Image 1: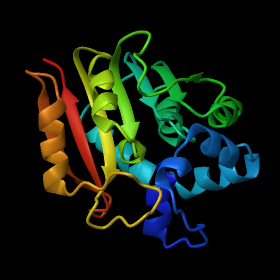
Image 2 (image 1 turned 90 degrees about the vertical axis):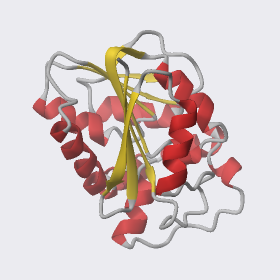
Image 3 (image 1 turned 135 degrees about the horizontal axis):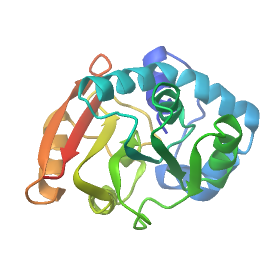
Image 4 (image 1 turned 30 degrees about the vertical axis):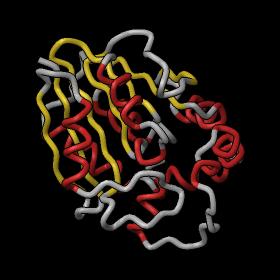
Length: 216
């Protein structure tokens, strides 16, 4: 899902017109799009630059280490997990996505990482030290439900790292939600668990916004 942001930032053209964002984001359509291995490899390459920026922020904030249990929910082409795996090979890494075709490709590309097909609205099977959810919530009809599910999946002192496009600069018709920096913070404050700490900010030349939510 992160590739749409990357295409806009990199000036890549050729996306077909999307008249129905709900249909575009349906499991059936996403599976069909990513059933082509060549297409999957293309978006893997095009998404790399924003993913590298997210990765550097994770390291800067001290959220990565070799002894952490980490899951990327809505992992897409798993670029971010791939970077983490290369520097922190002893970390326990899981990638989850609702698209079976994406997960099939991810398993081939990153055999050292565990992957599972999972709907973001369904409760995680276990808890984690760090949950990643990058460029996902803008595609959802019920982002509040997804956020609450993520909050239920972190350990004590665990964190969630989320990114979404800056809605003031985002014009991709396949997105359902367009948050401004102000409305992004309001949305998070209304839905995070009491006692959790929240940090928000702009990243990637202000084209994306991030949130770090930490359980006490």
